[in-house]
Length: 404
Image (cartoon, rainbow, N blue to C red; front, side):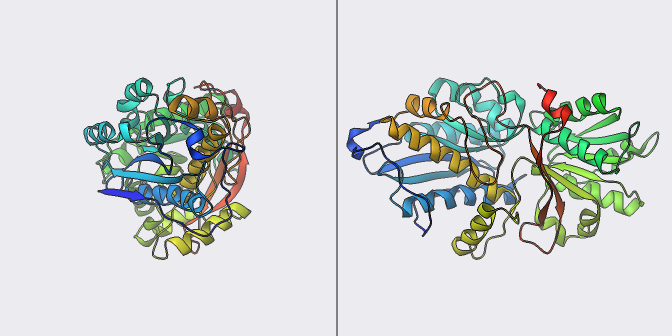
């Protein structure tokens, strides 16, 4: 699947270029001409995270459509070259080889296995890339710029929330269902760290991305005594299976999932009621139905741009990361350097990035995530995207001390 985006919408964003400069006065490199600026997107639009990936791309598109409608960036129209790697590493590697010479950088690279495989190429090509994955493994990697908080920190903050609300207590055992690799295994570091700091025990069970029936894993979690909460660092299908098994067995405990583990389409399935009653979702970005001014504006503009769209939490994240890239491009333009080196320097000069739907971020260091705060969200089938904010972004004491 190939999509090229260079569309325009009415919006409030402004064009920025170096004072007194024309497009030809700016130093340029790959992906930049006097009239266009091309960025790459490698996403999963049809497999494990397909529905989430589609809305993540829409969030990316929405921001740049708005910028294009107001003159573009540095006097240039932004084009997005989008590829669907179907969560297949070999496909992604091939697509990267095709796209890399034609783009300035990548505003989205979805999937921990994909990022892991491409990290050496990103370092050697200096293609600035915003990974749509929140593993601490991406720290200190040339070319990769992480945004928001990490998988383990989101899990730490989520567990602290459950404890603060009396949904679990000191001494309890928590089950944790997780994907192997840079998503689930990384999140597991967070749950184990929180357990150590907060007087809890974690019983972990690994699951493959292809698994949709988690009966064996669920039974393993219950062996020796029922867990008092179930943590999910996997995909929506795994969240659905766990919720269905818990509901069917009468196990009424909180289910806490990292953001990629929730898809609002689950609410129209037989497990929708269990999710509404028991699911909490921890993220570093505000959900689509958030009450902030920016979230409301995104929702209104999304409805106009995608009248048939099915929004998820990833719309806001996609918009936010596009905004991060846009602000870095603005800074590079101000310095008259739209090469990869110029974009890297500009990105790392941003000390207080505001997106409106994420906490303020300092991107100057590649050795730490720019935020340790998380939103806690609850299910609400009546709102677009299926989630509402239960707790505004906060950083728990264990999260502040977590170093990965």
